Length: 254
Image 1 (cartoon, rainbow, N blue to C red):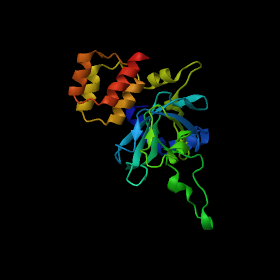
Image 2: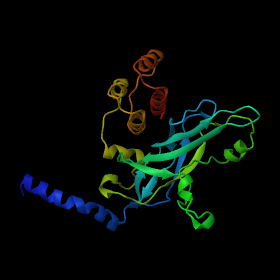
Image 3: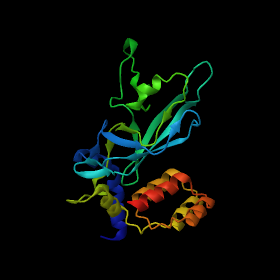
Image 4: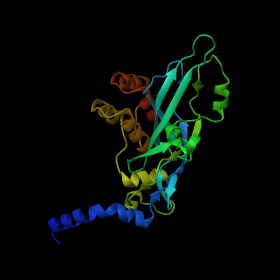
């Protein structure tokens, strides 16, 4: 068959692919837990509404034995309310929504912070969706609630469990796995690239890629970075954020 003929066949089959995924059962199920660790300190004293919050995935998440969310991957949240402590003993406020996690094929999947997405309030109305994405930090949260007149501080390294928000149909061909294959090697099999350098990171920053995207690349790609004092100064002067520089240092120490 000619190349043109193959293209026509592929175009005809494309609309049927989602049904093929569903029939195969290769679905990341609603409510699947994703263990996360906070990668930055948060405080109601200086937090800004709308600012991104960076999390690291602590364990591989698999579907039918294939890694779909890799350990060390990126999850993002957003600060939705931030208010420092006030006079008369009124404590600060800090609310964070969990947004999404990145799959090993680069796609984003929505998360929520409670296992059940729905719940009935007074009169039988569904109220769970209103708070479904709000992060509740345990075991620290109960302590924070008792700290009247204080700013809320959530330390870097705090661990939470988020949950996949809705069934997600996946293409199994994008998550190939072999016996004994690790999450890191699975990522490299899907996206074979050379080791990143300082110049690559600076080029991504200059190209206007989002910090979220650059962090995902740095954390899932081998790096051959120069991280001496003068190198770090040069990175900072080139506009590379502290968060990205820390990810480069972490990647080099593995």
